[in-house]
Image (cartoon, rainbow, N blue to C red; front, side, top):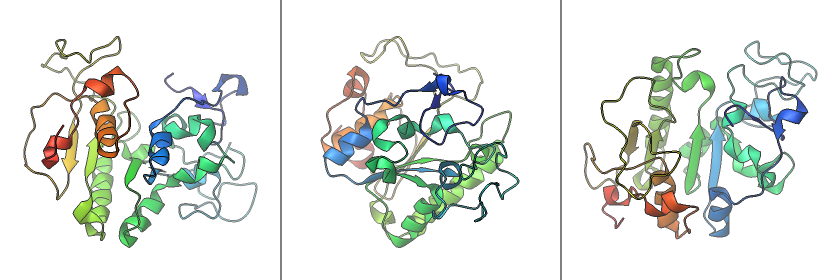
Length: 258
């Protein structure tokens, strides 16, 4: 899909309606967490501005309709959908689903990163939080840099560590790409979780928590769906596919059974 846009706001103002993906109705991890009574939320940098949440904590575009008050925001977008120029519409996974589209009941699960900071300070974060920083903080080559992304990550981690919920918190930091450099370790082919899409080259992943049973480098073979598998096995959710059913979860890092 690459940068295929959703059909629910926010989407790029340059995308023709015919090229926006119809809303999806297939199950997702958010649905399953809700069904299990597990609290969760998706937090995105710049979300309130992009989604037109005028009363949101992250709104910075003023109160005068018809203009984007912040010069760093996209001037071609219709008010109040004044997204930052580096807001990544196609990275907002749940906005592609009907249950979380604009006006749908599940929309409240999609929140601004500013809410994450305030809830961390108050000790009111949900059990599961997904965090997607604004484009300028994602370390991607071409339009940002590693330093600004790492500084932003440090700020997020520090905010969680200062909060009253830290003693029971685990943070997983990972990336969707390997950085573009050659990896001297070939992707594994012997495991039963390979499929036409992978596994591919390695990406860095950090697990930060006061609950860790050991500190250091873990040489267990994981893949991205190990994060999904960890959530599923922690709250008794059935796997979505063959890969998350077969991969190692991160549970042993906390002294729990895999």
